[in-house]
Length: 308
Ligand SMILES: [Zn+2]
Image 1: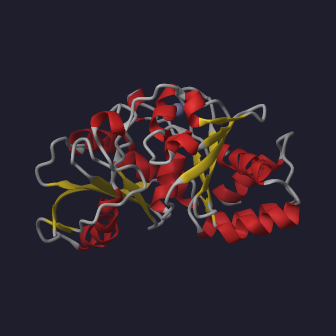
Image 2 (image 1 turned 30 degrees about the vertical axis):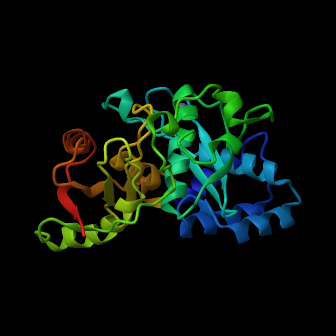
Image 3 (image 1 turned 60 degrees about the horizontal axis):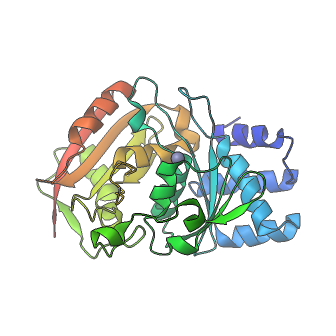
């Protein structure tokens, strides 16, 4: 049984599981083809075939996402399923790391938003959660332009607007920033030096187009990461900042959060690439190197980039 099949089988055993066996096989095929994303046409197909509301489908998909969580420290598994402006539904789960500081952890809401952004989503409209969002995640979700109209579906079926969960919020506007998460910049990037080998060249081709998606209006230090697992599959990540600074998501963690939702999650890590400006205001090079050494004996590339 593949990791995706295994997790869907776990979801089917839950007392509050409502979807049919045919929906489960459909979800299995979708998740193998689209990382952590249920495309809008598949969402419509599932709604019609299962005769459930959109809210119920999101809650069921949140249960699927929760099965992918990795929580060796807290043992508290969190799932998130978010409906985007495109009509796609995106999944995310929390990811804790043994032997690394707690601030390396990825929260389910962060994973969900990062996966959505990497899938080409333009805005989250609503998010279904297995637990009420922590203060950190309320702040992280507030970094979207349309944050005040976003809804959160909480355990117990209550739906609240994000501003009800985060009154008198501090956000980009307080720092006079007018770019928000999901708003790609116009720049394109190139490596500062020619790649030293073919692995670096191949991974850079995947990483460079991610840099305009990085949300770094506070430090002006965009970053992207690519992580390759032993099965040869590459997983992409982008650095996402926040007006409060601390709920930011490093690019390396963003890539690992994407990997977590795939069949590659149990393969082990073979290569990673971190792309940053040559002389960034803030750098993730040192912390990414330390995290990488804890997680893998493989190769870590760190390459400088410049705007073309
Ligand atoms: Zn959180």
